[in-house]
Length: 244
Image 1 (cartoon, rainbow, N blue to C red):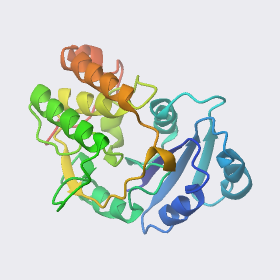
Image 2 (image 1 turned 90 degrees about the horizontal axis):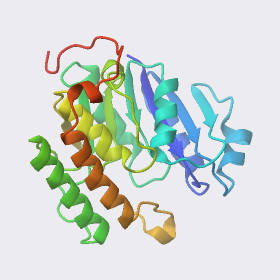
Image 3 (image 1 turned 135 degrees about the vertical axis):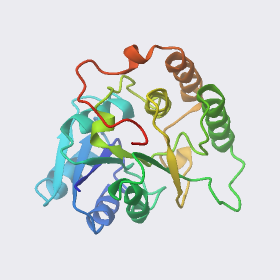
Image 4 (image 1 turned 45 degrees about the vertical axis):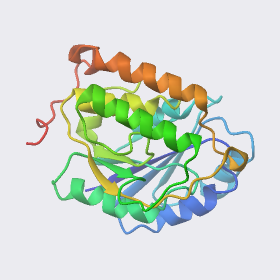
C-alpha cells in the first residue's frame, strides 16, 4: 500500500532539509507531498533549488501564508496514496516513528492512528503548552466519548477513503481539533501509538499560541453539535463502516 506523507512547511529553513532526508530514508512504499505555505525565511528557495525533482517528492507552493490547515487541505487534495500521514517540517517528532504508526493501518487492524507524545511517558515539562494540550484532549474525550491521550499531535494517519468522507475547513491550527472531531462523529475509533517528542520553544520557531487554544475549544464545540450530514462531504465515495 502506498503511503502519502504530507508535510506543511512555513519558515522551517533550519530543519526542512534534514527532515526530508530522514523521511526519504523510510523503508515504505511512499510519496512525499510538501506544501510550502508562503515561507519568507528561505525555506521556499531551498525547496526550489534542492528538493524539487527528487524521486518520490512533489512540492507545491501557496502564494501567501494561509495556515497549517490550508496547507494540509492542499496536500490531502494532491495525495494519491492508499494511506495519508501528516508530518510537520520541524524535528519535534522522529520520522522513524512513522513506520510504527502506519503499520496497524497497512495491516488492516485500524483505520485511524495517532502518534501520542504522552503515552507511557515518564515525565513531560509542565509548560503552558503541555497543560493546554492536556485540557483540550480531556475536553475532546468528554464531548465525544473518546479515549485519546494526545488530540493535538501532528502524527495523524488514516486510510485515504476515510479522509475523503469530509473536507478540512480550518485554515490554521484548528485543523487538529477539526479532523479529530469529524473522525469521531463519523464513528471512527482513534488508535494511538506512543512516539518520541523533543519540544521546541517559540524562540526556536514554535508557532502555536494561546489564541489557538480558544479556537480549538470553539471548534470542538462546533462539530460536536453539528449534524453528521453537515460534517460528511456530499458525494463522498463510500467507505467501509468503522470497525468493519
